[in-house]
Picture 1 (tube, helix red, strand yellow):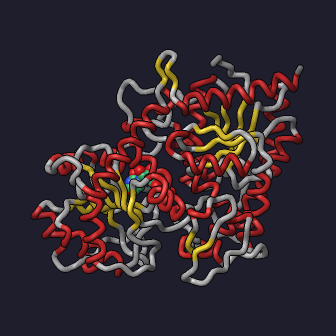
Picture 2 (cartoon, rainbow, N blue to C red):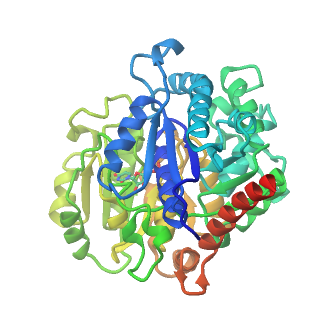
Picture 3 (tube, rainbow, N blue to C red):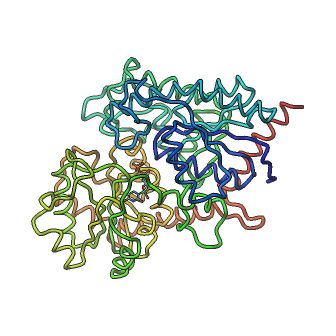
Amino acid sequence: MGSDEHTDVVMLPLMGHGHLIPFLALAKQIHHRTGFNITIANTPLNIQYLRSTLQQDPTSGISLAELQFNSADHGLPPNIENTENLPLDLIGKLFASSVSLKTPFRNLLLGITEKQGKPPLCIISDVFFGWAVDIAKSIGTVNITFSTGGAYGTIAYISLWLNLPHRQSDSEEFSVPGFPERCRFHVSQLHGFLRNADGTDLWSRFMQPQISGSLQSFGWLCNTVEEIEPLGLELLRKYINFPVWTTGPLLPKPWLNKSSSSLALSGNSLYRQHAGKEPGISPEKCLQWLDLHGLDSVLYISFGSQNTISPSQMMELAIGLEKSGNPFIWVIRPPLGFDLKVEFRPEWLPEGFEERMSKSKQGLLVKNWAPQLEILSHKSTGAFLSHCGWNSTLESLSQGVKMIGWPMAAEQTYNSKMLVEEMGVSVELTRGMQSSISGEEVKKVIQLVMDKKGKGGDMKKKAEEIAEHIRAAVRDEGNEKGSSIKAMDDFISAIVTRKQDQSA
Ligand code: UDP
């Protein structure tokens, strides 16, 4: 692809780290491939965060633009501009407040258009900013929607929001429009706000028009790989009826071997820079500990960047881990009901647990934050007990690591369902932060999954096949282009051709 620093692309991610980070990685990919000038627009504090991340990589070719925003104008506490660690009712308000970005965003686009003498080639906006479609049209360009999640999770989210209400009783399963009958969902897989939504509440009044707006985009970019989500992509394409380009996975560097493509390298170092996250251990110490253990023997446990579990779940998880006898690394935080920043208290775990685990080398407890990708890519790591956030899911799959699902929120229950039913690489242990689990159940699931034969063996084989597909998708050597590289080229060619047709 040619290089053109006079062509602009403007991006607008949702105000949450889980969205800013993949948007930034996508921006780097596009810039690297085309030389286009990429501007990421967001509220001032989110731009500050992106600026500090970009300072580590001054060659990125990305510009940042602050959009005027004052959280107090929207009934939010001062300086609240990001979903990170916000209670649900404030997240709802923050989502709703994002509509106020329309005017400053339009002004930014008009400024770029005036300066360059032509509008940006396209806008790339989050699925939650359906209003960007009309703004793009009004300045003579098009909107592309970028979903930072996987295809299956995205289509489930879209269909569930656009086909309200879902008022099944607690024991009920139900079919979801667009999904085959065999994929029935269970009411416990719905987040509380979706379960109670009826089209009149704050959440549905925001979600429905924004998602419907995004469905009028020119095209759709998805952080996934064509070969690993055949059902999700088939359903998404049927539902939205315009091109979907799969340019994933947007992951940091170490997951690939040295001969791999520039596409994947462009996400380098993004995930290390998680604002305010204090690592509980150095990567070296973690890897030394893993070196003590055998091939595929260690279970890694983490619930993502912000979740924790209830006190009773924490206790039972510890009991089950100890009973299983299986080696493990557990990223541990204060349980639900406690400030995540307070010091970890031994009484949250069975008496003497930490000492026993440390002495016997059965378990390594990492407080707060661990070098996840380094752990997943170590040969001793055999499985990942995860909340099934999409980044964690892609990181695990890219390393051929099978999973135990414990979904918590957002689209994680759909990701978990897909990992179990479509990919066959996971067993779901439980759902949510309130469920009751027993140490005995935990032990049984760990033993089933960690087994190198039987079901555990099959899961491993499937996870390795998926890892191979992911590696192949980002291959870019001579004429050999993987599906994600091709999708990126197809996307660029589609927007450039549209522009040429328009000018002709
Ligand atoms: N992560 C990490 N160390 C931790 C916990 C999380 O590096 O101890 C990173 C992880 O590698 C992933 C991201 O944080 O890239 C979590 O993203 P995900 O989409 O899985 O979940 P979320 O945090 O958005 O719920």
